[in-house]
Image (cartoon, rainbow, N blue to C red; front, side, top):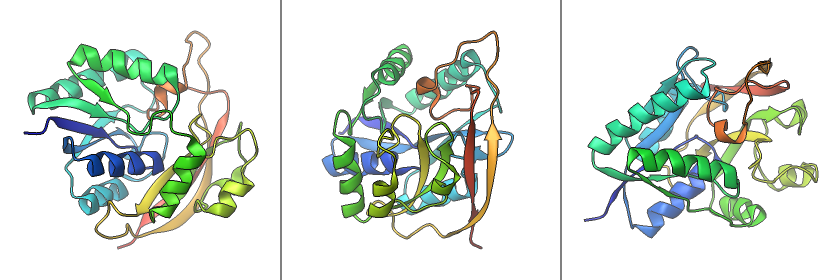
Length: 246
């Protein structure tokens, strides 16, 4: 019997490729997808994608969806406690492993592994230390399709949000931006590819700007919160709304 694992699903390209790889390996029983959701706006944290589209992804992939609902601006302590409770629930379901799409952020992996150990889990990282240029071209060659839903204004301007990632997008990226956005430069929503039984249908809506003010009394760590709203920033983000097709 294969060990059971929960997959940490952001809805984006790195998650999609990591899930593809872990399913191809066939060494684990993936019991479901775990996604952090802003409880107030019902959107995927940081990615800004509506929960309806997240649910469509899970249906097309054919895996159960487990949502971790978090407040609009939780502290790290609040986020850690909510995640701990959720992981203990998943542990009772027989899960022993937790799979992530992280690539090279050492601090983020250390943070994850420390929290997992306390909950009795081990982390699995199918994309770890693979060159991001290799990963993005493998992603495209496999037939995956993804759209940029959020960009960090420190790294990219408004013109990059709402674009489909293709060779032209890659060529247009500034030299300092990682092609997979591993440093938080941009976030994506994957809507087609070999893990889906059918494409996710949507229309692009308005593009909005949002800024999270950095608190004066608390330190922040963007890396450890790349899939949560628990960190405030002194810079802004451009978001492209995706609207489910009826």
